[in-house]
Length: 237
Length: 115
Image (cartoon, rainbow over all chains, first blue to last red; front, side, top):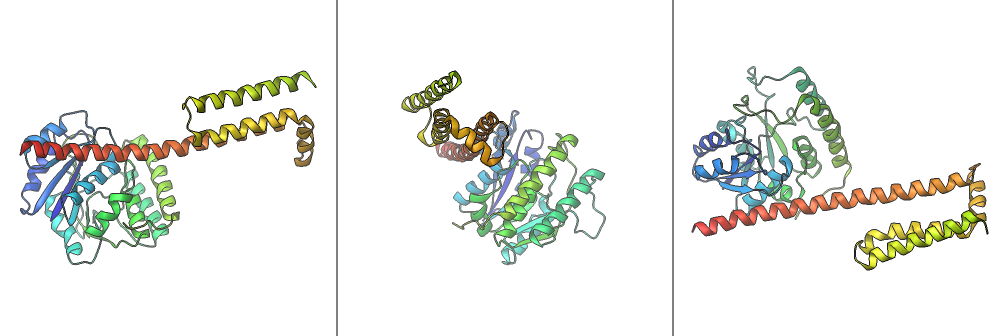
C-alpha cells in the first residue's frame, strides 16, 4: 500500500487542489496531510475534502518534523511505500508511478524526482542564484558521498519500507531537510536513485525561502550535511 | 589575610550555598548543577590558596596573575553555556517527538470517534 505524505504549512488555497489531483490515483493509496501548525484554514480545507488523514501538529516543526510525522503515520497504517508530495501544487501526480517503479522493482530505497534529468528543456523557471545554490549543493553532495545527485533540493521523493523505517527514526529535523536527507541516506547504505520529473510553478502562496534567507539556508544546510557525513552509521531498528 | 581574599572566600561560599539551595529546592537538576558546583568549588579553592594563583600564572606564563582568574571565569561560563546548548538541543528533540505523538494520537482519536 502506498501512502502519499503531504506536508502543509499555510496552504489553504492549494491543499484541496492537491488532494483532488491525488485522488485520481489508484485506490490502494492513502493520503496523509500533515498540517504543520498552519495559521490559516489548511486543516479545515483538507478535512472538508474527506479524502485524507489529516494530522494537525500542535506546534510548528518545520518540513523535516512534518514529513517524519507523515512517515510515522504511514507506517502505523501499514503502508509499504511512501511518496512525499508538496502541498503547494509544485509536484505532478503523474510522476508518482515513475518514482515508485524502482522501489517496487527493489532497485532503490529512495527515489528522487529530479528536475534536471529530463532531456527536453524543463518548464521549471529558476533564478540565477537558485541555480548556483543547487549547483553548489550538487558538488557538495558529490564530495561528501561520492554520488552524483542532480537535484538534491527536490522534495518530490518516494521511499521504500526500509527507508521509511529508517527515516521514521532518523529524519533530519530541519526546516529544509532535502539535501541532508540525501547525505544521510547514502551514508547509511540506502540506495538512492533519481528519475526525471517536471515541476510546476506555485499556484498560490509564496515560496518558503526568501532571497535574503537563502544565504543563511545554504550555510546551515551545508554545515548540517557535513556533520551528517561525519557521523557514524545510524542503527537500523 | 588580605581584604580581597576574605571577600572572595565569602563570595565563593555564598555562591556554593546558593547553588546547593537551588538543588535542594529542585530548581536545578543535579546533573545540570555539576558544572556550577565544580567551578564554585574551584573559585573557593583559588581564594583560599592565593599563592597558588601566582604560582600557576607563572607556570603558564601569565604576567598579571589576576588575569588568570578572569580566564578561569570565562572558561567556566563557556562550559556552562555549551552545556545549555546540549540541553536545549536535547529538549527540542524531545518536544518534537511529543508533538508528533500528540498529533498522531489526536488523528487516531478523531477517526475512532467518527465510527
